[in-house]
Length: 308
Image (cartoon, rainbow, N blue to C red; front, side, top):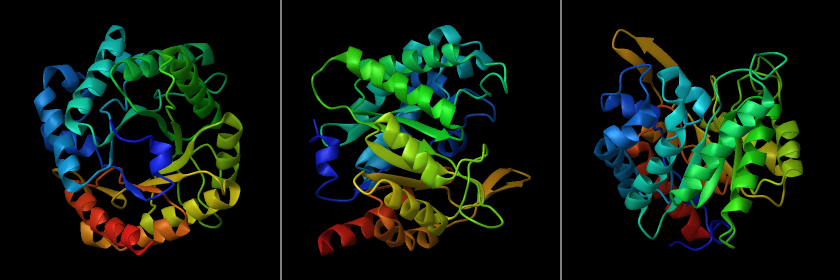
Protein backbone atom coordinates (compact mmCIF):
# COMPACT_ATOMS: atom_id res chain seq x y z
CA UNK A 1 0.00 0.00 0.00
CA UNK A 2 1.22 3.58 -0.62
CA UNK A 3 2.25 5.79 2.27
CA UNK A 4 -0.51 7.84 3.96
CA UNK A 5 -1.79 10.39 1.46
CA UNK A 6 -1.60 13.38 3.79
CA UNK A 7 2.00 12.54 4.67
CA UNK A 8 2.96 12.31 0.99
CA UNK A 9 1.48 15.76 0.36
CA UNK A 10 3.90 17.26 2.87
CA UNK A 11 6.85 16.28 0.69
CA UNK A 12 5.69 16.62 -2.93
CA UNK A 13 3.00 17.66 -5.37
CA UNK A 14 0.89 14.72 -6.51
CA UNK A 15 -0.85 14.01 -9.81
CA UNK A 16 -4.44 12.81 -10.09
CA UNK A 17 -6.11 11.35 -13.18
CA UNK A 18 -8.22 13.06 -15.86
CA UNK A 19 -11.74 12.84 -17.19
CA UNK A 20 -13.67 9.58 -16.80
CA UNK A 21 -17.09 10.26 -18.28
CA UNK A 22 -15.69 11.57 -21.55
CA UNK A 23 -13.31 8.61 -21.74
CA UNK A 24 -16.19 6.16 -21.17
CA UNK A 25 -18.12 7.78 -24.01
CA UNK A 26 -15.07 7.50 -26.25
CA UNK A 27 -14.97 3.80 -25.34
CA UNK A 28 -18.57 3.29 -26.43
CA UNK A 29 -20.83 4.35 -23.57
CA UNK A 30 -23.91 5.90 -25.12
CA UNK A 31 -24.90 9.41 -24.08
CA UNK A 32 -27.17 9.07 -21.07
CA UNK A 33 -25.97 5.53 -20.39
CA UNK A 34 -24.95 4.30 -16.94
CA UNK A 35 -21.17 4.30 -16.69
CA UNK A 36 -21.29 2.73 -13.23
CA UNK A 37 -22.89 -0.39 -14.67
CA UNK A 38 -19.72 -0.93 -16.68
CA UNK A 39 -17.92 -1.73 -13.42
CA UNK A 40 -19.62 -5.14 -13.53
CA UNK A 41 -20.71 -5.54 -17.16
CA UNK A 42 -17.60 -4.19 -18.92
CA UNK A 43 -14.89 -4.10 -16.25
CA UNK A 44 -12.06 -4.56 -18.73
CA UNK A 45 -13.07 -1.40 -20.59
CA UNK A 46 -13.01 0.56 -17.35
CA UNK A 47 -9.65 -0.93 -16.42
CA UNK A 48 -8.19 0.05 -19.79
CA UNK A 49 -9.07 3.71 -19.19
CA UNK A 50 -7.74 3.71 -15.65
CA UNK A 51 -4.61 1.82 -16.68
CA UNK A 52 -3.88 4.53 -19.24
CA UNK A 53 -3.98 7.10 -16.48
CA UNK A 54 -1.71 4.94 -14.35
CA UNK A 55 0.71 4.59 -17.27
CA UNK A 56 0.58 8.36 -17.81
CA UNK A 57 1.86 8.84 -14.27
CA UNK A 58 -1.18 9.43 -12.06
CA UNK A 59 -0.45 9.06 -8.35
CA UNK A 60 -4.16 9.06 -7.51
CA UNK A 61 -7.02 7.59 -9.55
CA UNK A 62 -10.72 8.19 -8.91
CA UNK A 63 -13.30 5.40 -8.99
CA UNK A 64 -15.92 5.19 -11.74
CA UNK A 65 -18.78 6.09 -9.37
CA UNK A 66 -19.59 9.75 -10.08
CA UNK A 67 -23.32 8.95 -10.47
CA UNK A 68 -23.16 6.04 -8.05
CA UNK A 69 -25.68 7.07 -5.41
CA UNK A 70 -28.92 5.10 -5.35
CA UNK A 71 -30.77 8.33 -6.21
CA UNK A 72 -28.79 8.80 -9.42
CA UNK A 73 -28.85 5.09 -10.25
CA UNK A 74 -32.65 5.08 -9.92
CA UNK A 75 -32.73 6.91 -13.26
CA UNK A 76 -31.48 3.65 -14.79
CA UNK A 77 -33.57 1.33 -12.62
CA UNK A 78 -30.45 0.38 -10.66
CA UNK A 79 -31.06 1.89 -7.22
CA UNK A 80 -30.95 -1.46 -5.44
CA UNK A 81 -27.53 -2.21 -6.96
CA UNK A 82 -25.84 0.90 -5.58
CA UNK A 83 -23.70 -0.89 -2.99
CA UNK A 84 -22.72 -3.60 -5.49
CA UNK A 85 -21.66 -1.17 -8.21
CA UNK A 86 -19.67 1.08 -5.87
CA UNK A 87 -17.82 -1.74 -4.18
CA UNK A 88 -17.08 -3.32 -7.56
CA UNK A 89 -15.67 0.01 -8.80
CA UNK A 90 -13.29 0.34 -5.88
CA UNK A 91 -12.12 -3.28 -6.14
CA UNK A 92 -11.59 -2.87 -9.88
CA UNK A 93 -9.51 0.25 -9.43
CA UNK A 94 -7.57 -1.35 -6.59
CA UNK A 95 -6.37 -3.94 -9.13
CA UNK A 96 -5.24 -1.20 -11.51
CA UNK A 97 -3.68 1.05 -8.89
CA UNK A 98 -1.51 -1.63 -7.37
CA UNK A 99 0.57 -0.92 -4.26
CA UNK A 100 1.95 2.48 -5.27
CA UNK A 101 -1.14 4.56 -6.11
CA UNK A 102 -4.05 5.86 -4.07
CA UNK A 103 -7.62 4.82 -4.86
CA UNK A 104 -10.01 7.75 -4.37
CA UNK A 105 -13.66 6.79 -3.89
CA UNK A 106 -15.90 9.17 -5.82
CA UNK A 107 -19.18 10.56 -4.46
CA UNK A 108 -20.71 12.92 -7.01
CA UNK A 109 -23.88 15.04 -6.81
CA UNK A 110 -27.14 13.13 -6.39
CA UNK A 111 -28.55 14.95 -9.40
CA UNK A 112 -31.32 17.11 -7.98
CA UNK A 113 -32.16 19.87 -5.53
CA UNK A 114 -32.69 19.52 -1.82
CA UNK A 115 -36.01 20.48 -0.26
CA UNK A 116 -37.47 23.05 0.00
CA UNK A 117 -36.04 24.22 -3.34
CA UNK A 118 -36.42 20.71 -4.73
CA UNK A 119 -38.14 17.46 -3.85
CA UNK A 120 -35.20 15.53 -2.35
CA UNK A 121 -35.34 15.22 1.42
CA UNK A 122 -31.97 15.67 3.13
CA UNK A 123 -32.40 12.44 5.10
CA UNK A 124 -32.77 10.40 1.91
CA UNK A 125 -29.77 12.05 0.27
CA UNK A 126 -27.68 11.51 3.39
CA UNK A 127 -28.57 7.81 3.47
CA UNK A 128 -27.72 7.45 -0.22
CA UNK A 129 -24.31 9.06 0.28
CA UNK A 130 -23.65 6.93 3.35
CA UNK A 131 -24.48 3.73 1.45
CA UNK A 132 -22.12 4.78 -1.32
CA UNK A 133 -19.29 5.71 1.05
CA UNK A 134 -19.56 2.42 2.92
CA UNK A 135 -19.36 0.44 -0.31
CA UNK A 136 -16.35 2.38 -1.61
CA UNK A 137 -14.47 1.74 1.62
CA UNK A 138 -15.45 -1.93 1.54
CA UNK A 139 -13.90 -2.10 -1.92
CA UNK A 140 -10.59 -0.68 -0.73
CA UNK A 141 -10.70 3.11 -1.25
CA UNK A 142 -7.82 4.99 0.39
CA UNK A 143 -9.73 8.29 0.50
CA UNK A 144 -13.17 9.65 -0.36
CA UNK A 145 -13.95 12.68 -2.51
CA UNK A 146 -17.30 14.50 -2.42
CA UNK A 147 -17.03 16.33 -5.72
CA UNK A 148 -18.61 18.68 -8.26
CA UNK A 149 -20.78 20.22 -5.58
CA UNK A 150 -22.55 23.55 -6.06
CA UNK A 151 -24.56 23.85 -2.82
CA UNK A 152 -23.03 23.89 0.65
CA UNK A 153 -26.02 21.97 2.03
CA UNK A 154 -25.39 18.99 -0.25
CA UNK A 155 -21.64 19.20 0.32
CA UNK A 156 -22.27 18.95 4.06
CA UNK A 157 -24.45 15.85 3.64
CA UNK A 158 -21.74 14.17 1.57
CA UNK A 159 -18.89 15.04 3.91
CA UNK A 160 -20.80 13.96 7.00
CA UNK A 161 -21.74 10.67 5.32
CA UNK A 162 -18.11 10.08 4.35
CA UNK A 163 -16.97 10.78 7.90
CA UNK A 164 -19.55 8.41 9.36
CA UNK A 165 -18.62 5.63 6.96
CA UNK A 166 -14.93 6.04 7.79
CA UNK A 167 -15.66 5.90 11.51
CA UNK A 168 -17.72 2.75 11.04
CA UNK A 169 -15.01 1.22 8.83
CA UNK A 170 -12.74 1.32 11.83
CA UNK A 171 -9.40 0.34 10.32
CA UNK A 172 -7.46 2.68 12.59
CA UNK A 173 -5.68 4.31 9.66
CA UNK A 174 -6.36 7.86 8.54
CA UNK A 175 -8.72 7.93 5.54
CA UNK A 176 -8.86 11.48 4.18
CA UNK A 177 -12.01 13.23 3.00
CA UNK A 178 -11.73 15.57 0.02
CA UNK A 179 -14.45 18.15 -0.69
CA UNK A 180 -14.62 19.72 -4.15
CA UNK A 181 -16.82 22.49 -5.52
CA UNK A 182 -17.57 23.32 -9.18
CA UNK A 183 -17.59 27.02 -10.08
CA UNK A 184 -18.81 29.18 -12.95
CA UNK A 185 -17.05 32.19 -14.45
CA UNK A 186 -18.71 35.49 -13.56
CA UNK A 187 -18.80 38.72 -15.57
CA UNK A 188 -17.03 40.35 -12.64
CA UNK A 189 -15.57 39.17 -9.38
CA UNK A 190 -14.41 35.68 -8.41
CA UNK A 191 -16.07 32.54 -9.77
CA UNK A 192 -19.17 31.25 -8.00
CA UNK A 193 -21.04 27.99 -8.05
CA UNK A 194 -24.43 27.61 -9.72
CA UNK A 195 -25.95 28.18 -6.27
CA UNK A 196 -23.96 31.38 -5.74
CA UNK A 197 -21.21 30.10 -3.44
CA UNK A 198 -17.82 31.84 -3.76
CA UNK A 199 -14.52 30.02 -3.14
CA UNK A 200 -13.71 31.75 0.17
CA UNK A 201 -17.10 30.89 1.63
CA UNK A 202 -16.77 27.31 0.38
CA UNK A 203 -13.29 26.84 1.83
CA UNK A 204 -14.35 28.27 5.17
CA UNK A 205 -17.29 25.87 5.36
CA UNK A 206 -15.08 22.93 4.34
CA UNK A 207 -12.79 23.69 7.26
CA UNK A 208 -15.76 23.84 9.61
CA UNK A 209 -16.81 20.40 8.36
CA UNK A 210 -13.33 19.03 9.05
CA UNK A 211 -12.36 18.04 5.52
CA UNK A 212 -8.75 17.07 4.98
CA UNK A 213 -8.28 18.42 1.45
CA UNK A 214 -10.14 21.36 -0.11
CA UNK A 215 -10.69 21.12 -3.84
CA UNK A 216 -12.21 22.53 -7.01
CA UNK A 217 -13.08 20.68 -10.20
CA UNK A 218 -15.02 20.97 -13.43
CA UNK A 219 -16.80 24.33 -13.79
CA UNK A 220 -18.32 26.40 -16.59
CA UNK A 221 -16.11 28.50 -18.90
CA UNK A 222 -13.12 28.14 -16.59
CA UNK A 223 -9.63 27.35 -17.84
CA UNK A 224 -6.66 26.11 -15.84
CA UNK A 225 -5.59 29.67 -15.00
CA UNK A 226 -9.07 30.43 -13.64
CA UNK A 227 -8.64 27.42 -11.37
CA UNK A 228 -5.35 28.90 -10.20
CA UNK A 229 -7.34 31.96 -9.10
CA UNK A 230 -9.70 29.71 -7.12
CA UNK A 231 -6.77 27.87 -5.56
CA UNK A 232 -5.24 31.18 -4.46
CA UNK A 233 -8.50 32.14 -2.75
CA UNK A 234 -8.60 28.74 -1.08
CA UNK A 235 -5.04 29.23 0.11
CA UNK A 236 -5.99 32.51 1.74
CA UNK A 237 -8.93 30.90 3.55
CA UNK A 238 -7.25 27.57 4.36
CA UNK A 239 -3.49 28.20 4.58
CA UNK A 240 -2.72 24.96 6.39
CA UNK A 241 -4.77 22.55 4.25
CA UNK A 242 -3.73 20.70 1.08
CA UNK A 243 -5.56 21.92 -2.03
CA UNK A 244 -6.57 19.90 -5.08
CA UNK A 245 -7.55 21.27 -8.51
CA UNK A 246 -9.00 19.42 -11.51
CA UNK A 247 -9.91 21.80 -14.35
CA UNK A 248 -11.79 20.85 -17.51
CA UNK A 249 -10.12 20.91 -20.91
CA UNK A 250 -11.84 24.20 -21.66
CA UNK A 251 -15.54 24.77 -22.36
CA UNK A 252 -17.44 21.97 -24.11
CA UNK A 253 -18.71 22.55 -27.64
CA UNK A 254 -21.49 20.45 -29.12
CA UNK A 255 -20.77 19.28 -32.67
CA UNK A 256 -22.52 16.96 -35.08
CA UNK A 257 -20.65 13.99 -33.63
CA UNK A 258 -20.88 14.86 -29.93
CA UNK A 259 -19.15 17.15 -27.43
CA UNK A 260 -15.63 18.43 -28.05
CA UNK A 261 -13.19 20.03 -25.58
CA UNK A 262 -10.61 22.26 -27.23
CA UNK A 263 -7.90 22.75 -24.60
CA UNK A 264 -4.99 20.67 -25.88
CA UNK A 265 -2.65 18.78 -23.57
CA UNK A 266 0.14 21.21 -24.48
CA UNK A 267 -1.97 24.29 -23.71
CA UNK A 268 -3.19 22.96 -20.38
CA UNK A 269 0.26 21.79 -19.30
CA UNK A 270 1.43 25.40 -19.48
CA UNK A 271 -0.90 26.17 -16.58
CA UNK A 272 0.26 23.45 -14.19
CA UNK A 273 2.96 25.66 -12.66
CA UNK A 274 0.38 28.40 -12.08
CA UNK A 275 -1.82 25.97 -10.15
CA UNK A 276 1.07 24.84 -7.99
CA UNK A 277 2.36 28.38 -7.45
CA UNK A 278 -1.13 29.33 -6.28
CA UNK A 279 -1.02 26.54 -3.70
CA UNK A 280 -2.27 23.29 -5.26
CA UNK A 281 -0.71 20.09 -3.88
CA UNK A 282 -2.77 17.76 -6.08
CA UNK A 283 -3.30 18.51 -9.76
CA UNK A 284 -5.50 16.56 -12.16
CA UNK A 285 -8.05 17.05 -14.89
CA UNK A 286 -11.80 16.83 -15.25
CA UNK A 287 -14.13 16.73 -18.28
CA UNK A 288 -12.36 16.46 -21.61
CA UNK A 289 -8.90 15.77 -20.21
CA UNK A 290 -7.24 12.58 -21.41
CA UNK A 291 -4.28 10.37 -20.54
CA UNK A 292 -2.18 12.55 -22.84
CA UNK A 293 -3.08 15.63 -20.80
CA UNK A 294 -2.06 13.77 -17.66
CA UNK A 295 1.18 12.59 -19.25
CA UNK A 296 2.21 16.18 -19.90
CA UNK A 297 1.05 17.25 -16.44
CA UNK A 298 3.36 14.54 -15.06
CA UNK A 299 6.35 16.06 -16.82
CA UNK A 300 5.57 19.50 -15.38
CA UNK A 301 5.03 18.20 -11.86
CA UNK A 302 8.26 16.22 -11.99
CA UNK A 303 10.11 19.45 -12.83
CA UNK A 304 8.40 21.26 -9.96
CA UNK A 305 9.15 18.53 -7.43
CA UNK A 306 12.78 18.26 -8.56
CA UNK A 307 13.27 21.99 -8.08
CA UNK A 308 12.01 21.97 -4.47
